Image (cartoon, rainbow, N blue to C red):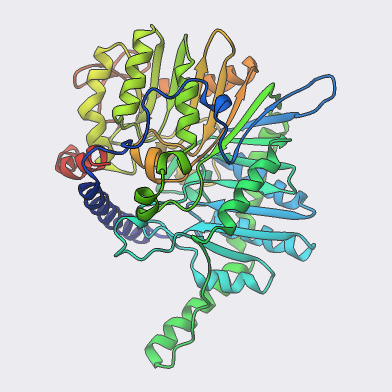
Length: 522
């Protein structure tokens, strides 16, 4: 993809995001401003995950005497290693593969994954794919689905509501999941797109996944089934061959494009060699951690404009944030939050104040204006981040530059713009430390609209320390907020609070109104 294509893609996504913001504001104007939790008891989060289990929620406690409920976890910080791990998992598959992503792009990473999936079907493996059909990011369209059907791969699309459904289009499936043989799985922040695997020469994400093997995996697969079989997930409609000449030519070009996507290429083969050369040593030295208590939670499928009003929406659909708030409420030492978007609402502000009242140390890590992929989010962040600093909350922002954690496939990637995308939380408490990696952002979309999922591990301090070290190593190579409009780098030198380079603060300031709608009207 050349630079013009990247710019066009970015502009297209931005236009659709504005449409979503308008949709958000319209539906919330109908329901009353800032009434996201109108049907929910704010003080109900007390050991909720145990006293009120909900669908698609499971807690596996390991019994070392019988080896029951064993779950082994690996942390995947490197994008290149995370891609190779997915390749390895697909190649190990003997019976079934489930693939579910918010973004699935037909770029180099998508080509590699799809060709591995096709090879798996030729070995007799059953492959199912579920992709969110959000207009902001949707690219893997019906032409690709039709081509994969010949190999026995069925692609379904989550929430194909048209744009004029200005509310329902906002209920996206933001989950990311790969499951193999009910035995091993990966979840975390990464979608299937070059940006998430350190392969873009323009913009990349520092991210994090958890690989898990064990008893929790069938529960994760069962949640996939619930989404895949739900009526909101549609079977694709095969593209119809047009009769008019101009339209027929477009149709034939698309068919040819997809056919080429499924064929091997020299670029792909060369990239595969480099990917494995970088990733294999990392994976071989990657430590596995046994998890004493593993929790998996996800939101329920099917949320829409109508379910929000006719059903007890919070009780029937919104489960992950309840688990997260429950975990946070039990923290009595330190809370570390890494999220690409960091926008508080009434509930999260209440939780933050509760932590401060309990003398809990709070550390936040998020994107600066330079590193974010959404300047309207940055506009809201800089409205509040200085107040957080005054309250004693330590806040780091990613500077927007490459961090030399591992080698890259393409040298140009080092000069690309980098954002942080990991959704990771660490809960330090006297009765056991815990880590969460998942798809949940600290914003109102994840709290109320998007379906999210998270994997928690409690009781393995070595794992918690490894994830904490990764978060802080990245955060400390960014900028720390120290005063109003002031930040310092890791050496204590004053730096631009908006990040590295020359971030466009003028554009950000013009984002005040859409950012206000994003944060307040949700």
